[in-house]
Length: 106
Image (cartoon, rainbow, N blue to C red):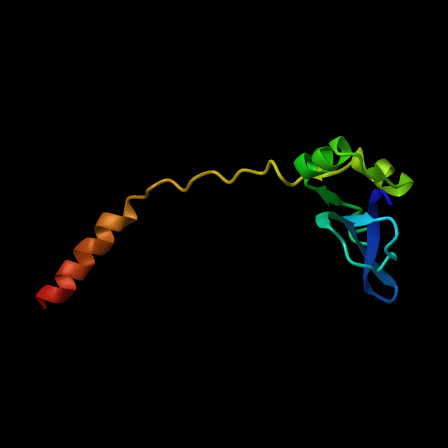
């Protein structure tokens, strides 16, 4: 039994939404997945979000992507490398302390 990277259909009737998952090839399309790798929304904006590091890992250990997943990978947004910038300290914190001290003095 081989491991496949494929789509599973989610969403409502006439509103499809797909998850990109790693699953055993013997499982059905609605069966249990090993790992969740990303999403594909054909109706919304056609955007594909993917954890590329995990996708590369599964390819390295021998997982076989379906034809549809292989075609979606080229336009995927790399979700795993998104780094949030740290929030800089603002000048408002000392002002807040001064108002607390003024309120306590009254």
